[in-house]
Amino acid sequence: MEGAPDYWDEAARALAARDPVLGGVIARHPGIHLVTRGDAFTTLARSIVGQQISVKAAQSVWDRLCGRLVTLTPAALARTRKPALRHCGLSERKADYLKDLARKFLDGDLDPARWPALDDETLISELVAVKGIGRWTAEMFLIFHLLRPDILPLADLGLQRAMRIHYNGGRALSAPRMRRIAAPWAPWRSVATWYLWRSLDPLPVDY
Image (tube, rainbow, N blue to C red; front, side, top):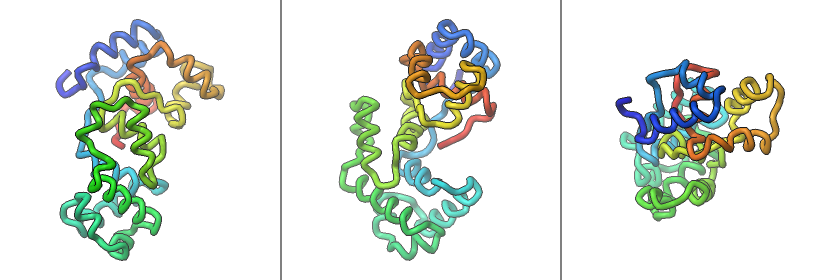
């Protein structure tokens, strides 16, 4: 499968063998997989811009921001004054969040070169130290940008819905119960989550 993470085929086979429900979902969605996009700073900045607004509104703000900065780098964002960021459509809070993100990249508090050596929880802790980045955003970053194979985003509404449908007759599941159901998926819980998302929406999304 061209462009797939190197673990993808092995993970899909293992998940299908361990879990008949997932096996059915995987069989219905052949030939698609996670694909990483963009650089780390841009991906995190875009996730902040898109919080709590529609996809269309987020794209509009993002386009104006990119037009204002020309090149979206930590240095360019750090030297842009807050009124200019607000003029792009950012709220006061999101402008602060982006400034904090830029500072942490410039200061080395966030250093992508170090991330391969960090386990998932340590890296999530570093990311949530940035203003405006919560655990869900950090988990989406680990799944979609870093392609970490074993993330289980229990707070994700799509995963909750898919697990209710496939494993509990549409009834609500507690986080501990979700974790127990997902235990056999390790160390490929990101892959299982991604296929469960596909069961709700066949078209992959970016974060």
